[in-house]
Length: 259
Image (cartoon, rainbow, N blue to C red; front, side, top):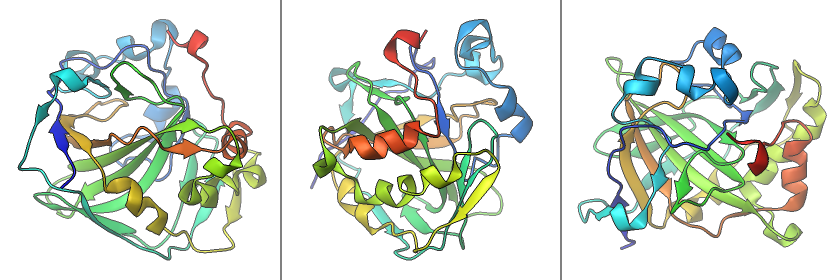
């Protein structure tokens, strides 16, 4: 069985991380007006968001420090059941550089103590989470909502990628999305994908060790109703061609510009 660890709860969000990216099926708990007004650096950055974003005791993102993590042998390998054929539409909505993928939901399920439906996914560049103080070029969040009409609790899986040296590092799952980005360079344009979106290439990436902690949304209201699972596979790669396709649509923050 793969090793799994539980990272201790942190009382404040990690510093030195900036959210620059796009959303797929943005969380229903964040109103569009809130997303549009957010700033991620400077005087109006996260420190000014107020509410739980500043005083919460289990805020996301965090730096996952191996020496501070506790092995939890009650945790097992992730159990997921994702669709292999989902019709998708990609839209550059111009709201916080948002990209949406539409299809018949749920796309799949994540089985924890409860069942969570996959409602979408989004990216951050650079990563929001760090591992032992190391940031990554790209972070993929798979967002799931509990299968209950009485709760809005979420469970998010995070995968961390660095840019590879050549196209041998092409990621098959990301390729389905990134290949379509040049066709939606203009805000408020839509591209209907020619083929179904296949989640099967994700399975090998979800079979390894991970860190689990109770955290929050990373945008206001920063609600602390999210179970986070961050995969500890540090060898995930996105090819230069794929990353350039991403950067052709969305700004990527450099280390020097992060406050």
